[in-house]
Image 1 (spheres, rainbow, N blue to C red):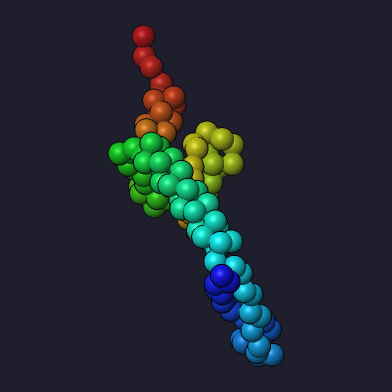
Image 2: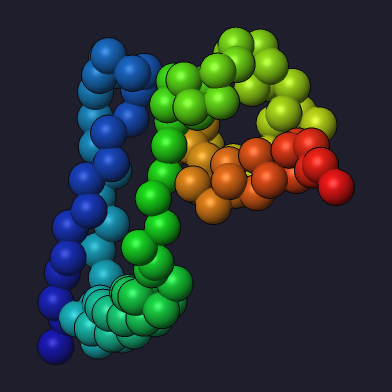
Length: 112
């Protein structure tokens, strides 16, 4: 038995001109195999994400600048020089509170 799954793919520029669709048909057996593989992959990703979750608090650029009383340019220098690790999501930088604390501890002058 052949089962047809239809995928429509828009062709043309980003405004949809030169419209037209490409139709792809696959057998039910092939579709079910792809579906099982995808579900397995999704389960693996879910497990990885669950195992790596922490309750770590993250700060954005403005929060770190206010906390450290530094300019945005100084914060950029800390990123560029590797003094302060960061993660970037959609062009916005985030910093772990623990990393900011380590930066503070590392730059504190200790009196003997």
